[in-house]
Image 1: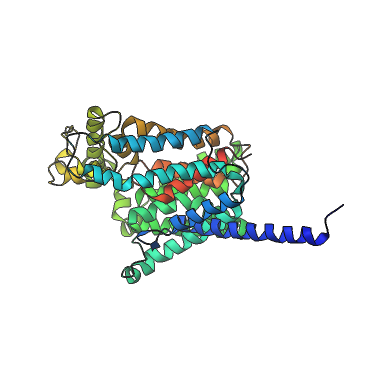
Image 2: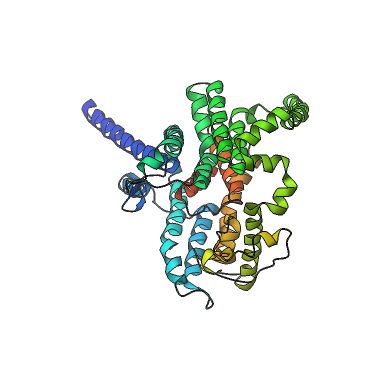
Length: 414
């Protein structure tokens, strides 16, 4: 005997309520990734939403919460194990507080590993239209907050300060998603105008790498799927014209007025390589990381200890005299996530970290023509973020790992 229609109506209503509740959780979690400026109990507010998402999955999913059937899930588990071993094997020549410093950030590393594992396992629940909408508005709020509200709201404990580096990194990671959403909701002109606005903001802020990577990520969303031999020929002709315009006196004067740092990067590259303090500090930190790796190759010096560890390193590079004589040179950030991970976690942390980043990039290159257009913005953002990790020590931000986990999940989503 068939069930009454009312029974089916109740079941449909309950299913719709669950779907709506999940989409709200997914929206606000994604929003907090692109607007990571709200704190609750001295933690990013997204952590509480993540716990609510896990609880929802436990209550409603018919498949296991955690699985290790895919290579990326296993690599995420190895990344977590590498972080634990780094904390458990603090070298004897480390400072007295090295263990406590490492232990204080270990939960973050385990959280990121779990995030990748769960998003891959629950990839069918990831509604990209919900995520993209949330990320777009998160990017808009981040821009408004950073430019206009941060100074006036910094006295309120729930608001977290966004540094110029973090602001740039958020835009690099999430601009492709935001541009895709705006293109679909409005049109290509609106999306291009928004992209140019973001690029101009980064130009004014002097974010050299950020400006370039945001531009490339956004343009990839707008035009990468239209590339053919004819357009490549047009681009090849346009490049010399663009370079000629770039080096024209009016354009050079405009860039000089907008940002001294951008002007030096474009027009005084030799001076940057030999005299720019920011660039030379990065070179010095690479030398320091390699010296640490040579001494502690497997498990490094412990998480969160790069600025807390002193070691003699090669000072023979050009321009070293401007930076290595500084009293606080050993306390400088690694300015490079790859060498930072290598120094703090050794090969046991570095290898799974690099492979986790490379597999989605390989997937994008190998399957470019078959990947749905709606998924590509995630991969474009992942690529730009992976490039920028070379210029900033920013793996300790959850919004970095959300994008990594999202790209990892889409690798296995048919």
